[in-house]
Length: 120
Image (cartoon, rainbow, N blue to C red; front, side, top):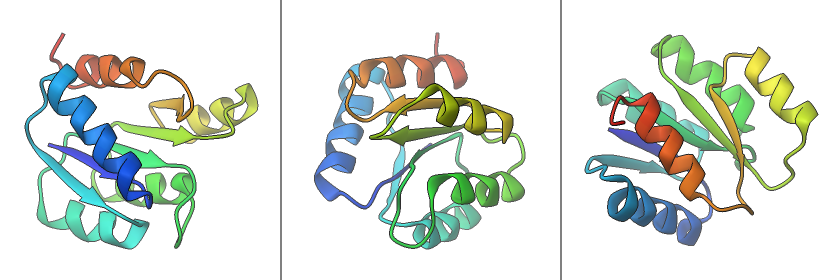
């Protein structure tokens, strides 16, 4: 199951469609903010979290740490609109699995998700 966390409904729905249609994933839970994501991960078995770097109630890095405190081995991908090597470096050093730009081709994100989830 993939947890998709983004406060932009249209982006989250498009990302879900990309995972379903091009990625072969079939189980999802969506959240609009960090608190919703934390509630969902406590009640469901999640294999991957894809988190926006900016959320209304906390940033993606803080949420990633909280998610990994609940499921330590959980792979977490962060999506950002202001990608830079320094952001990626900070993310990777804090235990985040990968950082992707929301402005780039998200097929790379889905391909990496398939690899992390053992689908490739």
